[in-house]
Length: 386
Image 1 (spheres, helix red, strand yellow):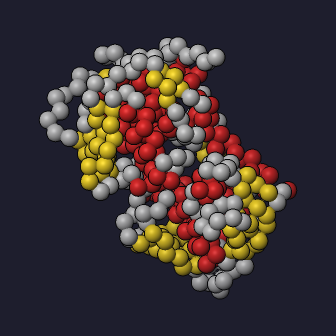
Image 2: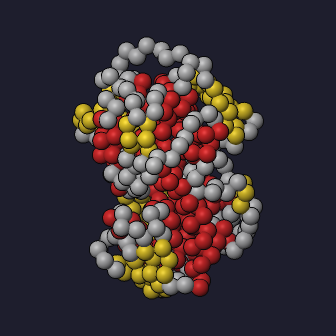
Image 3: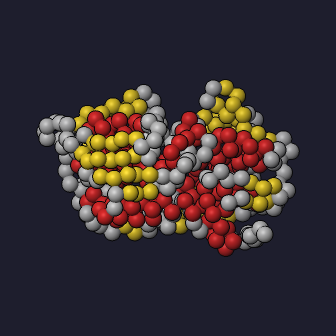
């Protein structure tokens, strides 16, 4: 939105690799015909839409894993709007060749698209954000069940802040043609990153507490759900004027298996599954459909790594996975990270229960480059293996 507006200052911008990569590629686009989104799904999807409506011509490429992550729904929608996009290898997957944009609608008529609501919200956000640049704007109809709704809400709230004209009637979202206005904005801190500190408090010695700055009670981030979820694992949240305070509470007896739905917050699933297994507090996780097509197949990765500790994640009915354990113990196991930042950060809090080894720890650079540094500040002993 800043790029489409042509200006404005962003404060508290993350140093995450994906964020910095997005900034570099947006800046580089006018002077190159090859852009590399690497392993960043958000960058690949948002840039595809941005480059299409800005009439960029060239190739948008990524890592081998990125070439296994589908993008066909977004490409087909952009083609209907007037974008010329071709697949360079496999149909429906990156890398892509973009060859300009030709409007298919009269200026006064909005581009009308229908996409499934249960696909990645990144497709939907990508289309919405470029809506003001389409001739006649955009009318987007979401079909079926709509997942990750908070991400859509967050997108349109920021669009409106930057001057977009947006309305919604049920699952039909309308963006009228307009120009984004250069806007100064201070980015809220990340509830996804905060989830790992919730996990640390849950697994820490009795009475442990910590304060995290920059998090808001009125957040639109779906991952704020971690505050309520972690009450089941003994972590209480107090909201402060500029942040939150976490404190461990005694665990209440568990009389039945807890059920938690991650449809609106899939990035929390790994954190909760690990904590539930470590505390042997059985929980059923639903809404995990998108986990199969993340940086790795996160369900399979969780199953493999939890088993090393005596934990278990199994499908008890269609779409319902139970995390639990028998004799869970941490004793210097080696954790594979699968090129997935969230695997590393979800399992690291187990160091509260004993030593462990993290393979390829640098994967955290994707979203939280200072993760290991901040763990060391809080008292963890971290050393590099030979």
